[in-house]
Length: 159
Image 1 (cartoon, rainbow, N blue to C red):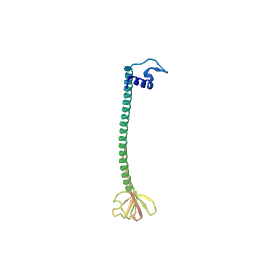
Image 2 (cartoon, one colour; image 1 turned 45 degrees about the vertical axis):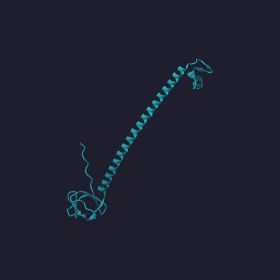
Image 3 (cartoon, rainbow, N blue to C red; image 1 turned 30 degrees about the vertical axis):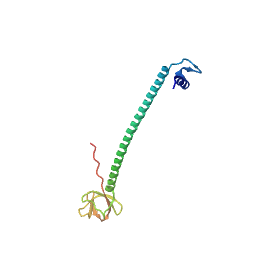
Image 4 (cartoon, rainbow, N blue to C red; image 1 turned 120 degrees about the horizontal axis):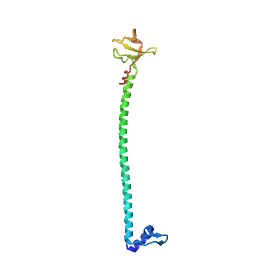
């Protein structure tokens, strides 16, 4: 492209570079001035582009880090959920009512029982499971027991 064509193109596209105010030129710049202005615009454009690319990269890194943290949180939550589910099943099994005719407590173990009148007592069974005792001297035959449940463990004292 010839200098006159380039000048006309820039004259029409970028009047501020060509020194135009209104319809009249203020000052006519030479080819070197236009080339310098173009180089400055390119440099400014590249600088803005590089800043934008840097910002996008930084945001992508932040997003990757946040996604990794989210996956860690999900994994931890899942593991805790599994542990809680297992603990819940264990406690349900431990705390469930058992029919006395189907399952007997261990000898000497204190358990909660329900009798045939739906009254609850904490008792110990004799070694042959025929007698129960509670309190200091109360005993009766175990045939009145309908259900039993192990007692929960005592809480640990805080140190």
